[in-house]
Amino acid sequence: MKKRKLLYITTGGTLALLISLFVTIWCPWINEDVAQAKAISHFHKSWENSADGCYMDCEDCGVISVRKISFGQLVTLQYQCGWEGDVISLKTNDVFINFLGKSKFEDESEPGL
Picture 1 (cartoon, one colour):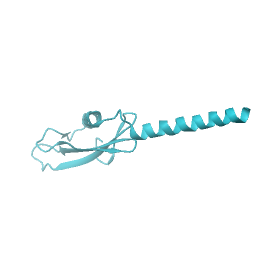
Picture 2 (cartoon, helix red, strand yellow):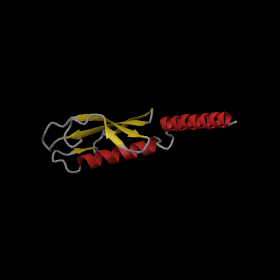
Picture 3 (cartoon, helix red, strand yellow):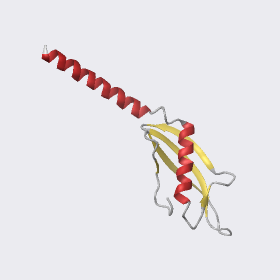
Picture 4 (cartoon, one colour):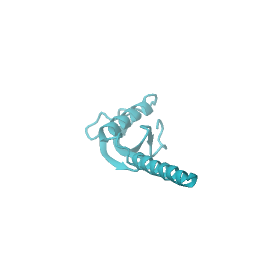
């Protein structure tokens, strides 16, 4: 009888773990709007103390795409950097928003990121 109870507990625990893993991979609470807002907020916080001034207040700047991937969303941002009078080019960078709502730039090599 004890073996049967242990089997039920083990099966139930495994099933609960699999369901939790599936829901975490799917993460429906991180939708497209939440991912965009978190990516833009992360961008502004990353550049707020930088002297060279990267910004998203240009015509072609902002969120380019949002893709659902395992454990979160991948948001592609387009922005400009540079001083007035410099050659200012458009740059793109991906921001990963994970299932906990934390954000991380995919390319951390630029100053301020």
